[in-house]
Length: 311
Image (cartoon, rainbow, N blue to C red; front, side):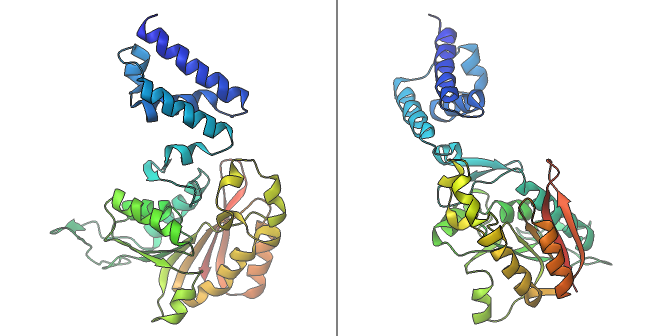
């Protein structure tokens, strides 16, 4: 058997086991396992230039058995890509998903429309200096992320807008440890401030702060729906999933408190669940704390992001 034939046979065996176990993308996951644990590039693998070592095959077998027990692939690989960036992931945090990129993209639209940095911004001895102009900011917009988890939104926003002053909070100490790892991974440990807090709780106790933009991917799965979620989704932190009755408990709390922490004309953006937009629309219009309410759809046509401006 040639090295190429050996590689293909091994890969097909993994793929078949994943397929038999009900994994939705067995071919892609089989290749991910080989790439990660075998440390062989795709070209070398399929050219037969290298074969897997026995130790790598043992690791892949362990990973395969773990995957077939319902553990998400990202927890096994300890990594996940989000908006073109790689992040360290563990069972302490929610796995970043493509629909959350809609929230990121919308936040960037707000920043680039209402908080433009001067085109003559330049780098001087490390920190970026932004020169103020008409409709522009000298120090960069102040942003708060609620429920940062892995830190993927805070990191991605800061990479796109290095002028921003980012604060990212989470109620979970374990999640904040993962977020800190990702700050170091992307060299942003001095650019992003991490705070342990239950929503705005920490900021009631210290000097009151306010932000230009607040973003959040809060838990929004109705608690009654959690038992029916796919097995691997139920492996993710319940704290990051459970939105209480009807899924809007945390969303409602943020909507109620955020005006006290937004600057004049500031924006609030949140990811929401399917079927929640109309109830939230009624509540927002009735409370009259916001203006310019809109919902942004994801690729499947679901209203995925709520966007409002402080009245």
